[in-house]
Figure: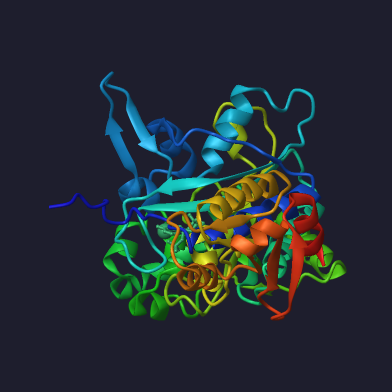
Length: 415
Ligand code: ATP
Ligand code: MG
């Protein structure tokens, strides 16, 4: 029996890959407008990097990591997300030495041992961006605006932006305590997961999907009513700047993130179109993370979006590339001429297809239709003798004679 791929690990085939290329190219183009440079980090890191940054009591570290021991007895993990690796590299290469403000973006595969379903896979892809060294809320608003700009450029009206603040090491513990006291009386309603993490991570009950947890947290106190003065002011200014530039948002005080390093501004881009896989992009501030990983005490903020989910939102759109030209040639001398012309045209930036098997004119034209070529050039014996072929504009149906030189053909294709 033929060997198949591993469950949850997908191939991205021609036909679908054009959409991915479009998403990636749009991200690069938009992010570079905002001054972001690409960083490429390895897909594998020491396990302790993720354990320390993401947090021991999170779903990712508790049960989703692809961790194993390599032949040298090293504990390694296939990266479940990008921020930890980017910050590890930022610290290791002292990228802050010249300028503490770094704007970095990345794209690539991530790995989580989850139950595969539509929009949720074991190897999936993220495009993410990070800014270090700025506390000012303008940068929060800018990052969110850039993310919305990206979705606008893709022509998507979904997802929409939700924001929240998770406070800081000064005010979050107080809120945690208040929430714990509130939940203690309703402990019986919580799902097993939330019961278990009641001590370590009670905030997770706020965005838990189980009906019991939703019931228990209905009247729960809001984190936004418990922010310290500094966090409340920061959040108000983020909102002010978003309004200044017209970036639409709604406030979701129940939003918590599944990673421990977040502080203050957190956000998600959510959609109702993908069932329970509603988060298309997510992120927030991580003002303590860089120091926690052994770097300087610099703040940071970032996001990651799931490319599979963006691709699902673009599902209806057609991204297949059309060749500029198909050359149909009859007889060996004309086919040799078509081959010569094709190669010259490709060097001039024209995409060209031919038929390799010397089939009938009819079957060659069928192949041209299949490629959906913009133009078809026909070279038979007569055309070869005259040095002029018949060039047909497939969209308009018009036809004209054209000299069989790449310069002449390039000229006509432009019109
Ligand atoms: P979810 O709530 O759907 O599990 P998450 O909170 O675990 O998402 P993050 O860790 O914030 O997600 O990752 C950012 C984005 O990466 C998500 O918004 C989502 O689009 C995407 N993503 C996360 N896990 C997967 C997965 N297993 N398969 C596909 N995409 C994923
Ligand atoms: Mg998850």
